[in-house]
Amino acid sequence: MPGIITGAILSIGRAAGETAPIMFTAVVFSSRFLPSSLSDPVMALPYHLYILATNVPGAETNQYGTALVLVALVAAIYLVAIAVRTHYQRRIRW
Image 1 (tube, rainbow, N blue to C red):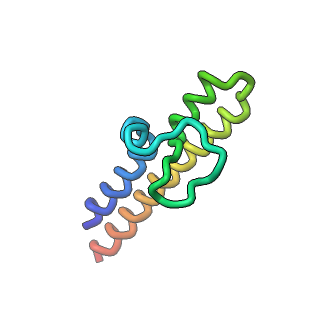
Image 2 (spheres, rainbow, N blue to C red):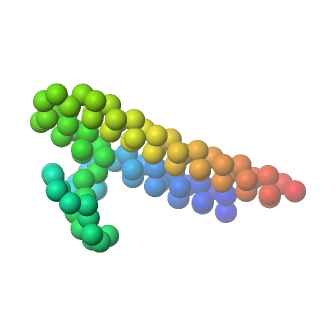
């Protein structure tokens, strides 16, 4: 069970870093308004970072901020996976 839960959480972290599946299903270049439902198109963080780096002149601060948020999100997901795995390993041993 700990391995299954850890694998599921790590796959979520992996998906957060991958852009291609999100680009094919729900990406939008720019939108003035926040999405109003879960089925509205959104911009993935890696794709947003790519757009900032290639098409928006003078957006260095936004590029670094987006990269920091993306890295922090993936690291937080991995830390949760490690904590869940450790919790279940301790629980099973005793």
